[in-house]
Length: 537
Image (tube, rainbow, N blue to C red; front, side):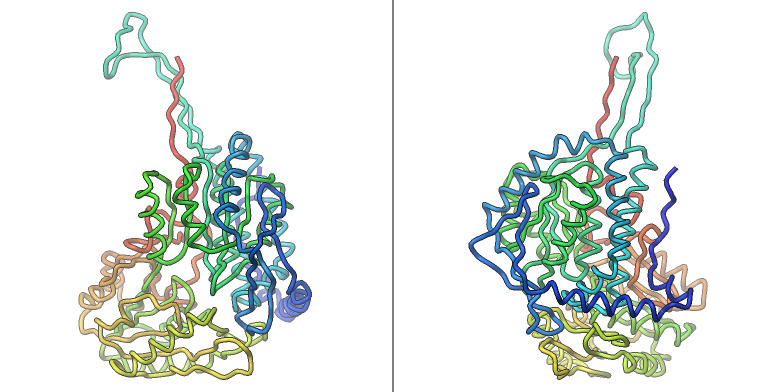
């Protein structure tokens, strides 16, 4: 009997055992070690073999652009096609490997990652600018995904069910409902080769989550990490090595780097590719679907795409609880989360005291080098994000009223550091309508809860939403009418972020998702398989 799933929760464990100092010491040591491996050249891996390309890409740390993470291969269509061929060649044997063996491989990978968590977390902080707490939490989530999906696969016995029918010896003609003696096997089977396209903001956890789901269910994978302005290629390489060390065979998981446009073209035009798992912007996800259909291919798509997440605060709410949850959700990781809070709707009678409390909490959030203890907000990931922030501030100044922040900061580091911004905006403002992925919170007031819910739902997206009220009737009305897949009520830790694997499900409604099924839930793995009913007389 396998151990039942429990969340890794590293920081909580150190904190509750009175060993927070040890947590910091382990991270600081790992951060020093991480720097020793920077600046090298790294290959891509196809069918387990290293491959070098003629063109290269240099990845730099968002903390300081003077820090070179490493030189990576700029793969092209021939490399991506070769990776698909390798994955197709490996599919037959891997798909026929007993589900219990696949589950055990990913349990081993989870255990290895648990042993290496500070190594991975420190590297992640340098690579995408997360604080130590965010980075360790993300590594924990990667561990959780592997263990949870292994347990789900085993609990469902590889998604195989057996049935039988007893017929009649006096009837042999076929018609609907005719008696027949049959043994029936209903199973979920893998599709084949999946292209997995990872985001920059959770390059460990989401990459592991999507890849594990595809692999553990018997598919093979061609995996591409983020490689452009927001590059996290080293994270992807470390995942490749982790899976290899755990026993994933060569060719089953292939690691390639290169332009997203070329990779997307190969994934949508190559007939051997049977599915695509993607987390990122709605525009990119939509283009992948359109291109695939235009090429005449029906593929399985598993996608999470964008959010513009609201929170409503009623006049009965505990304002201190709400202020904590709002500031954390809006400005953690510099607002670069699809689940980040970006739209606040507050009852007109409590606007001033609530905003004052949110500003007070925001002032306490130190902006700076995320490697350092005590820093809450690190850099924006790249120059595109900085430009978007500057443009948004200009819009706020011309069409709204800035209540706090709005400045690009000088830190002495070669990264892009900005102040969180809180701005009163009109509902038709671009700041309210568009996903910005920067630390900007818009504020609007309402008179009635009906009005507030209508405003919150007035978006093409439906990922996360928060609510604060002490009245049961208001809570019931909100939960009944809100159009979002992940909903939190009176949550002090964070109004819209922080879903835990196996506890919450993380699912997007409307344009935020595709299937209506979420990660970290019992419904996720079946999306990577197709059902077959087999009858044998």
